[in-house]
Length: 216
Image (tube, rainbow, N blue to C red; front, side, top):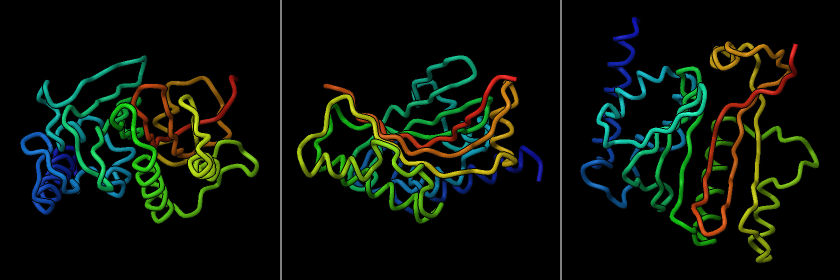
């Protein structure tokens, strides 16, 4: 299948998903879940070319997303909220070296703790269903177990960050594309779930690839 056909197929899939959910986040924000922005849908597009994602989600309209750039990375923040796990969030596509390297959800500022807990752990369960149990290094601080304990004890701080991760083979095609512009020798690749809480600001729930290595 050529690139044009792949892009058209992806666009058709996204369109069908939106119709199935009876919603369009740009035209009619709704409390119903948008199937185009579920964990399963977005996770399945990791590694896809940026141009295919932009076309499939109708992001060629300048008002559809706010774009920020830093080096080879771009973040495309959707300007209208969608509903996921009964929560209004702003989705954000993360591109690196012109492929989809991750995605993010941003909450209202600041989020209610019960909403944050419900959203994060629902997302975590969905990621475990897709990728299996996380391979987070034993003893690593600030895992989601710590987040749950902090929420139960009321000790969560406004600048906390929590993380879980899954190993990914270094020969994964998306990982090789991400590493193609670097002079580092990579010894490990993975995917992380990161929850970042900012004082008086939105919480961000990020799922993205990462690489660990050293300069040659």
